Image (cartoon, rainbow, N blue to C red; front, top):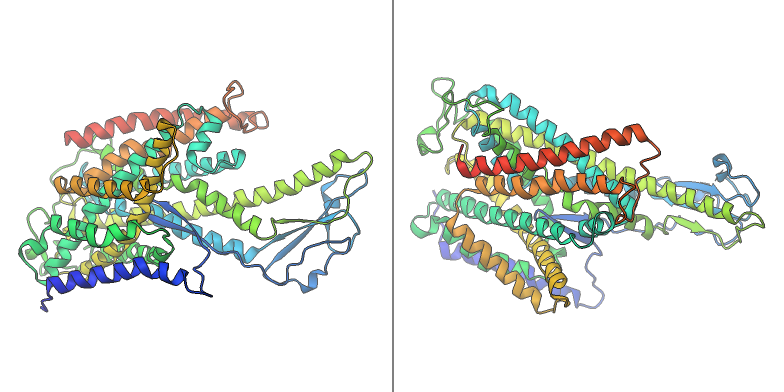
Length: 585
């Protein structure tokens, strides 16, 4: 085994981070060079990148009564001509034209290729948002209720049901944002429920992000310690506390103080790779998939790495079964709420499609001709509203497609890692399932390396989200705008607090379960249901939006009943999960 100098390794780690911190600042000042114009959002430590809109020369604005021939328009773009008839007719078929029809016509140019690219990018980033360190704790959630292999089936059923519910509430956020055009969840609460209690949304998001940050610090300490043992280091060099301090001061601190996080965008791809590689690796190490797995206890002669495991890592099966209805199963509920929580990026995701449409000629290119008539003031206005409605529906449909794709993929990944991790280690599945694997396992070493890169790249986005919520709450309660000097001070205090807390805590699964049970349940189940109930309540005078509950009374009534159930279910499950986790039931 090749031994590497610890000091040279630390230098190799800190030097690239220093360059990554200062290189973008230097390049941005070079004449003729501009950084990519990408709009980035933070979520569970992950990047939500919006593709830069490129206008194609084939798109032409309609400035006169003559419309450019559609044969010259790029095949990758869909051109829809909406005719605003200046006469009395308002029928929809008269709005669609395919040739020159004179004055009063508008053209909507929908860049189909660009929209598909944004949908693909949004889906992958939504998966990356949810598939963080939380998925690595799911096997332990199953182990809390049973160490029999048959216990995985009700666990998969529970994860699938919670995935469907989480996808529904995520879509509910999209519908509410669509109706209110709110930019943040806090603004959505202000428009729907009450301005006086809107601070609760910021506090909930802050607490959840702090829980994510703490789990990230614990994950960094665990995987870095395992990597050091693989290299062959000893003593303080394999201490998890040592690596938490070193990585925080030499890597995370300069990255978290970057003015722009555009330079960290490539690490989003590393995060997706880490999830996929870890999923495939855990599946291949499962004895039921690969009978010759080095962790197999099924066939004689298998399990070549079992002797390198400690008693806490060794597979354990067939001793305890408490059942899915036991309170211990609520530990898995809290972890599932954490693993499926990407709801706080819903406003950014929705407005990414709005920005794309606005940048592409504002989607609606109007002619200079006068479209009003003697008796058609309402006609012109109505046609314009219909056109906007078509564009809005396209935006909302794109949001739903991203939501569906993201949650389906996340559910599959969650179930695979949960199932294969539990079927490999059973009742001894640890809070971070990678800790169960031997330090001599090369595949586990690769997974730990990519996980480290993913966490280091996502940590600055978590810190930025926490800082934004803290400064927002400070502005709300102190009635003063934050100063520029408040940002680095807040960043330093956050890093110090999370680092100190990670010194005294060691179980990432405990933190993930608590964060998911408390704020995961609130953001994923309780808050969106309350928002929907308030928005569809005609008696609510505080709400500034209306979800048109009179248009479909029966379906709306059923949906309101379901949302009431989610409020009660989320509240009960949150408190029960906290009791189960802290009580060690």
